Length: 574
Image 1 (cartoon, rainbow, N blue to C red):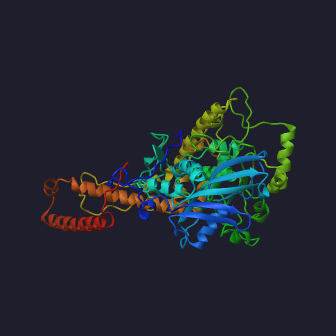
Image 2 (image 1 turned 60 degrees about the horizontal axis):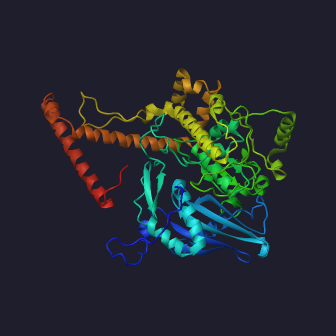
Image 3 (image 1 turned 180 degrees about the horizontal axis):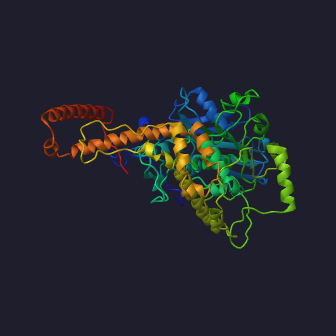
């Protein structure tokens, strides 16, 4: 969407044209949004929730978490100072939902920093926040581009105004493209599939816009353009669910990098905790900060901008720093909300250089490796610190396809989109091939023509880790992975089976396959030719089949009654 649509209050379609706007129904609004907030930074009180709509939605503890997570750690030091200037940025964070360790609330933030020498402390800042239980950045980032500036123009009224439009949206349909009306335009969003979606990702995808996992729109290329050779190492760390600290100069770069890392896993579900923007005020910080020296760091990905974390979380085994501190780092470009360029890149012959050598660069690399992440205390650099030895080799054919941006900013943005699509397509193919050996254990079976569909479906192929590894070692990883992995490729599968990402994904896919098998057998029963079946049966078999059919009919009636009670309305379909 290239323009900000004009907004007017939603009206009750059953009323006259002069009717006043209807107050959004909380239940309808909660299908997408938990609450809209305005957070103000007060010099005496600190972060304060100035407005919240609907009112009384958040507990006092939730208000505190939201308020403390909705600002950069300090007024940005990366912008040139003028007598009066305004800088806007968009980022997001997430925190556990009250009373649940498995459910999270996502906070999407539009932050405005106004530098003015005439104001106390040289400026002021305020944030507009959309809270939701859904990781739908493709929806809430463009919505923030509308709500944020509007809120600074007309104040609290904008919250109820936008809420009136969101409340009439149809319920989210995971895995589908949706057109969501807002003002005189519509947001076109591709929602990620539900975790229990039975349909596996197919490669190549028929539509590159279709999301196969979380944060499909995250910009991998822009976030890691200085670390392209290390993307395969980061992919393995994410596959294995290893603890990872992501450091960036700004919350925008930080949250974008974390979401890009999570998106590398598609179609695998990311089951470890990830925090796109983590601060010292987070309620989970005291726990990770007080870990004993001999304790393992919990499997989670933390995105941070505060240098204090480099000292406080020294036990975290893998650290990556991304982004370049530049005047344009956290500005929001016009048009679709994408991360912007983080710095110039070399231009040898029109292709992207991913590895340059010089004595000075070698010296700096050795110095940074010896100094560890604490070298970022003096100068920010894009780098990775880890003792992990990757098994997957960087794909030079993919790297050579990446296109140089050129000198024009418009061309640079276009080429970034192309490069990001190349990388996303490759890692989708890589993950899909990596998960392919588990396919036989997740495959639904249909009744054969010679058998009766009124019997019980056979169980899925039983899975035993040791037998799986032995069988995989005998037949190999397949041509795609064999060319891209080292000889110890089986170790990656062995560690994956013991990691935090495997069992939640496998159990969900297994349950989805069982449901799919039940659906296929139900369809077979509906289309079965009863006369043809019983013509080949003995009298005893006919009686048994009659009892089986009667049992299935009763079960179908019970399912229909339950569905009618819980879902009286028709569901939307893709």
